[in-house]
Image 1 (tube, helix red, strand yellow):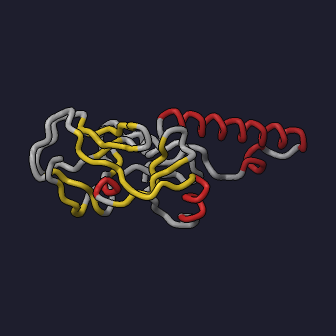
Image 2 (tube, helix red, strand yellow):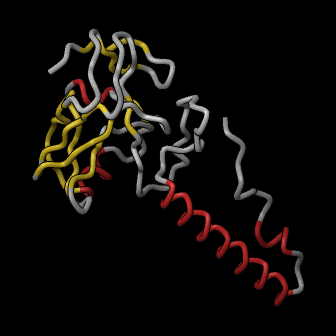
Image 3 (cartoon, rainbow, N blue to C red):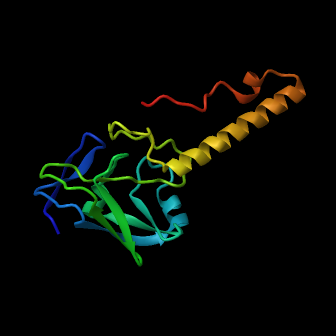
Length: 174
């Protein structure tokens, strides 16, 4: 395994950085920690702004991250990806990584009620750590909710704005 260091990150708090060049296709880290149910993870981290939970398989089991891999930050233009082998999760490079570069992978979040804003700064940043599929799903649900509010307002003789509130479904990137 390559030599790595945890230090301050421009993406989020602390990050994991290469101390030496890492060629594309190299297994870099294993995501380690206690295996718990998703429900237990939700209970354990209720109200906390950050978690280091990694869903395994169908997502009903999560790894409560400990060790260096928990410091690998999200990017919409990552240099690593995750690979599952049984109940183990590895992080491997998908590009050549130079010494001093921060290791990143796309978190592709798939559940949650929070906004999960992305601060990766890449040109193609989608503004969220949710997967593109999850963002589409959330957008469809918001559009459906808005349409239902408009129909209810029309039925009750109120304006659609007063029924749906003033909160916009589209948000600016922070």
